[in-house]
Length: 392
Image (tube, rainbow, N blue to C red; front, top):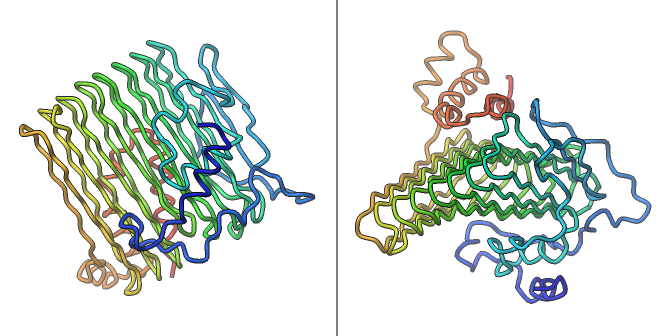
């Protein structure tokens, strides 16, 4: 579809409402995506100072993105790490059947193409930082990753705001193609300001005997929805998704995840954990779908929520859709408050309430944190989680 056709598609599709099942727990009342000025087209307005990062990484490649454009600061020889223009795979995974994906397709200007040739192994990660830097601005971001057969590498993207009070609209689409026998670690951390609306569609296609190790972190934003989909398209494909999120204040995080097993002998392992305090809310909807030819599928999904205040709330909705008859699929979901006995035990020994909650939160997230292979990412996510607990 042309940009104009995508724009018309976006305008035709209504803004989702709570009468739509996928949006039943996420109310977009008061949000007008057209009220934000996109891609830095804000006459006379000066961008805010550069945004800080959660991460301290020794990287092979570095790109920074804002409403004004994309700057490639470092790129390794022999690797395609360049501004995205056009590509035969662009838009083949994330289409325009959803309003925000159509909006992205129509208006994105700044994107990145990452393509690693066959058999190439990178020891250091490829890193891109996407920063909303203008008050009232909208940033449409596009990432296309192509891992050719037998390649092995890591891609880290981080969404940040230039200031904690900045209001804005963030709309992101990521498409990943993991070729035969390749292994990709994809890390996507969202730490936008709590005045920023964030909508994202991330989708990966995993080929024969390929492996995708996906880490998703959610700490910022006001409200929106993040879609995560893995298509296990080749026999022997494996995907592992590890997620951690923490919401406080009036934040609302919404995750919609989909594990589709298309080929036989495929494996998916999905583990998402979140902690909520104050008046924060979270929604997770997860679906495992096994196509009729995907025999010998092994799929697992879980979502666990830790509630740190009486006003916080979470909705967790797992689902299975199985058309094959020789599979192993399991799921689990829990929503529970802090264990009062554990809290009392710690505080009775002179530990402050804040420190006691920090210990409990660390214990709650330990198993998912241990799944993160990149040590700097694991440390950054741990620190981000613990930093949300008040000292007092």
